[in-house]
Image (cartoon, rainbow, N blue to C red; front, side, top):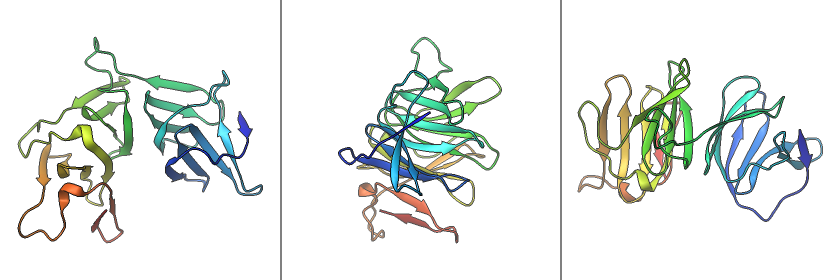
Length: 212
């Protein structure tokens, strides 16, 4: 269920507007849902009454389920039952997620979930086996290496189905999912923007990338 209360002392990591136009706040002290009628925020609780902490971002899976990217793992949250399934790193299991510090999750054009962690790179989730394949900084099939996962800030999917990642101090990484190749953009003499300082990226409807 939900516990309604106002909050103002904790930073907001991100916002998320879901498919039903519900507005969610991912905050340092948990996940909150905005109540349009009362103009308040509702703190989301699990069945044990524990507030989820340090939610970085979220992604809707279906009508009831949401992926929550947190500092303590990847969570699958059911808003109707308040049940939570937690995915954490297991050093003894190579098919577990590669780190508990999870930043972003996106679906590609084939409906495959990709998960970005702040320390070890990206993960490809296999729903049929409920396991993860780890994609570390080294390119799998050619392209530029990307050593900056410890400074990663953002991951998006562009209109052509390509993943883009930013890492402050390292540059902008593009990952071609189908070809399994990477390309790294950094500062060059012909580049008017210092790509080493890019922290945010978004894709416009016309396919252009906007960097911040």
